[in-house]
Length: 189
Image (cartoon, rainbow, N blue to C red; front, side, top):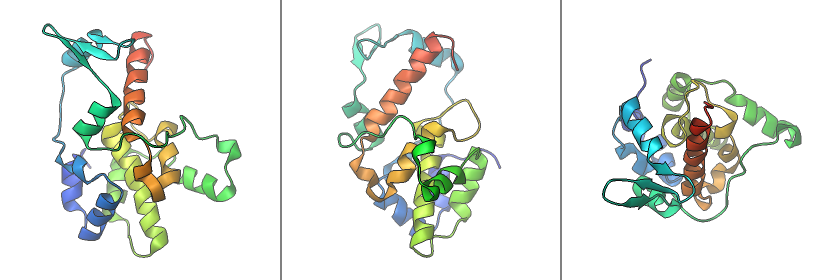
């Protein structure tokens, strides 16, 4: 299955799934167009980004990248609780371990298919859809990685789908991007 844009996946979902996506606060992301940004442009942006000041240096001015701006641009929550950086698997109870392992080593293609095909009948299936969609939206757009499968960095929010809008998504996304810039400069992937 070829990579689909968020908007395409959203259009193909049932109305019931669209209502769930709206309920958890991600319906605005369906308006994000497919973006194919050249590596040259990305490298130029990385070179012009000042990590210490959190700004992009352009010829005209400095553009400060703040959680508030990220929230406005992506229409995601800013403020509230912060997601933990990692999930300590050893401290999870058996039920949570099963949830954590449910999307282990899952590819974006499989996530996409699951989002489109899974049932949302009954409370347990609705919750499973929310968890899967949260991993999908991160892997597909908010926290993309060069690795083709969902990784542990995509897991902390799956334990908070019942109150997902109370969490600081803007800071979560911005911290991920900043760490990516830092790792790129250190030569890490």
